Length: 244
Length: 269
Image (cartoon, rainbow over all chains, first blue to last red; front, side, top):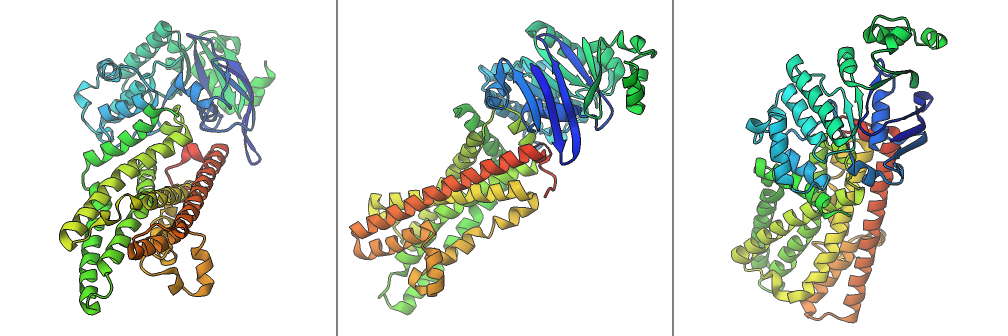
């Protein structure tokens, strides 16, 4: 996927300001930044649920603006704010979304996802009664039901305990590696980003301020670790920008 | 259009009803109570009239035919509202689902529920009050189809209004069938309306349908005038449907541009 000059303005406010980057197959990119930096707006524009004011998103060789449905067929996402129908059971939700993504051999796929995300015992439970951790696992199961080549994850482990969060991280890393899928990942957990991402993009006020290897980037900017760098970006983005 | 994606929307509504059958109350119980009440009213009117006018044929027939429209409009509206209440739009519209497929899924659900509703009405009217809905044979079919299309159009229109104005605007959708019935000649001829309101009736497809049906019941013949009237109603219904679809797409694009689509579900507008 290639993003060029992506911009989103809400009246006079620029939520995303001339952002350009590309994600390669099998690469996991961390999209970082303080609240309101523009991460979710970028993800929503890639998902085709928010129209950019300017710029271009090219996915799988197609212009997303004109081929949203075809592109969406090869993408999927999990986000804490995108609710799954609370009044359907886990199996029913996966069936409905399997049909939406025209998944072949759906029953078999659902059974394997239930095992993979440890959801077998909740298969006939309604999504509304699941704990937040179980709901996150369901959201991830839905996110890979169509074996997407581009996976967008907006804080996918935000409500998981450390043990399950680690397991989920490993599963997503394996998925990206085995399927050569590109992953765009947002998180406020810097340890997680260090453990998972091949590259990070720091956003501030809708612009990409920094980008690079999450393990080398802090030292390059005189910071102890990624968390310290994050705080610096959040507090003084302009002074950091001047150091570049 | 993908049949799998249309089926997904239908399936979601089917699961909802299967999961909580009390939802059927909204679909069928009011309908059943309404036909029973009108059945007794027509029986009573028949005793006053001493058999010179067949109230059963005219009123019960009108009620059943009007329910075709009513079920379609409220069916689309109900299914759309279920998606709002469950905050499904983000997941739906971030998937490969197209607007045409989403609306086709809502309409398919509405046709399914409407058909069951019609069968209930026809059975109660037949067994309870001796009304034979099929007395006109296959001639009734094109009239039903026109009302079906107009019902879809009004369902999509009200869904679009709610999509634009926010969930609280659902109250614009519920009274619509009642409002339109006043001008559509369902229970009385259009001539009973003041002349100043008759022009408005001429803009509504059901007015052509009910005027034609009344004539058909009395004459039993499908004349050239009736066919012309039916065609006028059909053309108008198709125009309304295309306009409502166009309006829905326009609202979708507006919500896409403003970010409302991603945030829809909570109160907006």
